[in-house]
Length: 110
Length: 191
Image (cartoon, rainbow over all chains, first blue to last red; front, side):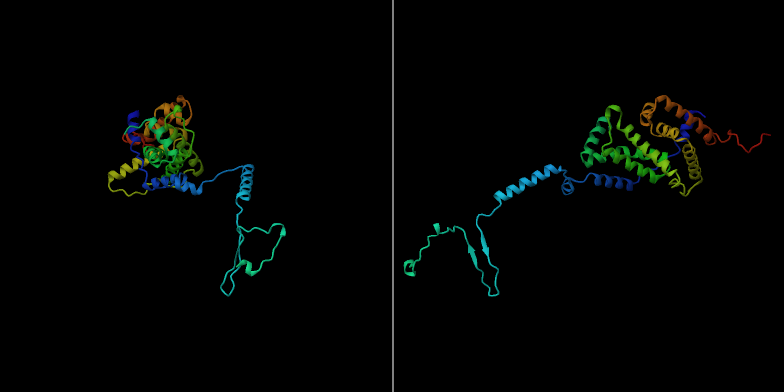
């Protein structure tokens, strides 16, 4: 048998076309391995060496201790069944210098 | 549509960056030949689909393609061939009959056509794997000898030898399809 005849016989064996289901499967697999950018944000992972992480935590703790303390303090007593609330505001409070207390009468105040 | 290696390289770079249109363009361009090759090599639609999927995912996952060493087509077929070989070794072709084996015959012509096609399939399937892949790539996918050597990873001379042996075997096995009258029948006595 000559090559051309053999080739003609071989060409009688035709392959099927790929199915659309395969295309859908490949596309889904590709999308799973290449998620959209906005989805990647939620699943992104960052690898940080422990010494670097420890340093960052120490710096954060230092900054919190230095700048995170509130200037004024307001104490609030828990509400009572009577329905009133007492607030003590110590802002601007100055203690009496050297403990030199002086008694004044009501008349002097008025 | 013009398909150049530069196009393929550009699309591949886009697909690896996550651009879906680039992925789709590259996939549509090469999926049918890869599927066809895998189907002819494994004889199973299901396995051929798996091989095609794995082949493209491996490519987009960052397999080391170098345009200087050959076209993307030969590179893809190299992956497909490796995957198909592995599948055949694992499954030993025992899982599935050919998809069209049970197809009904409408006419006598269909019957004859189907039988001839099945005979070719059986003859090719019976070839040793290395001869089979060389024959499929050369006869059905129009690869040159050099391209086949690149896909398979052997010298061109080895490809020629494999093709020659495959053709010799097929000439013997398929002789009744070409010239059934003059083909000697083993059971017929000469009077």
